[in-house]
Image 1 (cartoon, rainbow, N blue to C red):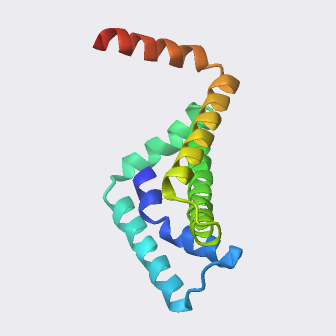
Image 2: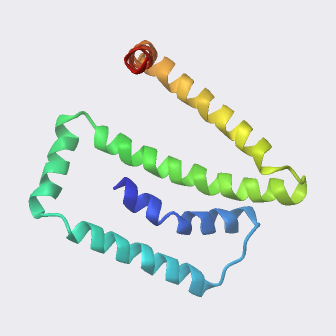
Length: 139
C-alpha cells in the first residue's frame, strides 16, 4: 500500500500547489493524473488474491486499528510531502535559499518529530538499545 500511495503522490502535490496558489494546471492534467493513479490502484489491487483482502480486514479488527493508523499516517505523510515540495519551491524562488540549508533544516525537523514520537510512544529507550546493540555488533 505504501508503494501505491508514494507512486500516486503527484496528484496531491498538484492539489496542494493549486490550494496554495503556486501552480495552475489544466483540468486535463488533473484528469490524467487521476486516471493514472486509478489505473495504478486497480493494477496493484487486482494482483492480490481475494484472501489477502480478507486477511487485511481481519488484521484491522484483531490488531486494534493498526491498519487504520497506518493508512492515516500514509495520508498525513503524502499531504506533508506535497506541502513540503511547494514550500521548498517557494523558498528557492523567493528567498534564494540554497538546497543544502533547506535539507539541513528539514532533516532537523524530521529528527525532532521522530524523537517526539519515540518519547510519546514509550519506545525511545528500546530504540536507543537497538542502536547500541547494532553499534556493538558492527564494531
